[in-house]
Every structure is written in structure tokens, then in C-alpha cells.
Length: 138
Image (tube, rainbow, N blue to C red; front, top):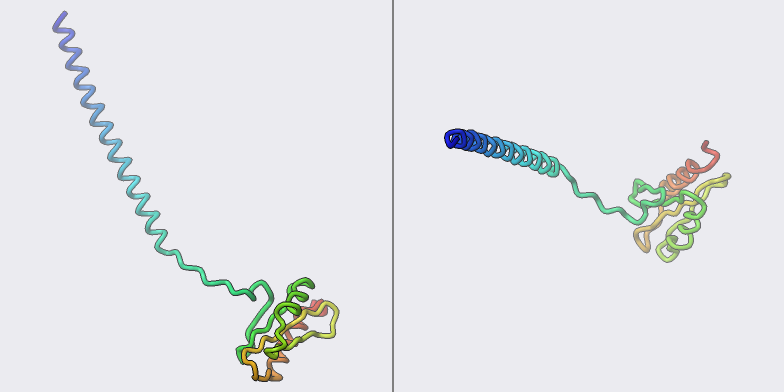
């Protein structure tokens, strides 16, 4: 009877050792997989670029003329009103441009210098933008 108990003790001790070895193996495998996934995530994050600053005029249609002047145009009637009332600076020599077409957009040429005159080329470019944004273009 005692020998049977002793044999059971040996079997259970052997099973406990194997269970410990298997659990250590599983834990090591889980640690290894976790480290690999962390390394993958870290390698993906190195490609992130810093976004550029968004300027105030980017909510409108806009472009720079060949002379470097900013031309703004509204996307809808509400933005056209906003451009004229808030962003048209008469003291700086800004110019209002509008085409005589149905649905033509309001354009404003923002003058950078106080005494600088705006050339005919810039006026032509702004006028072209106004015509291109009109309903007649379609």
C-alpha cells in the first residue's frame, strides 16, 4: 500500500515538473511574441511626419500670382461676403475683382506692400480665376 502511494507521488512529481516546464515554455513564447509586436509597432512609428501649419486662407479658393500676391476667392456666396467685409483691406491697396457672369466668384488680390501697385498680369490672373469659378464655366 505504501509502495503504491510512493509510486503515485513519483508520477505526480514528474507531471508537476513537466507542467512547470510547459508553462515556462509558453510564457517565454508569449514574451517573445510581445517583444516582436512592440518592435514592429516602433518601426512603423518612425515614418510619421509632422504636419504643416494650415494657413487662414486655406478655407477659400486661393493661389499666388506670378508676382507672389495672394488671390482669394469664396467657395459660396457666404464666403464671398466674408471676403469683402473682413479681408478686403482698402488701406493696403487690395483690389476687388469680379466677372460679369452669372455665379461668378468674388476675388480679392491682397497687396503685400502699402505703396506697391498691382500689375495688369495679376489682375488678369485674378479675373481668369473669377471666370473659372463661375457657373458659365460649366
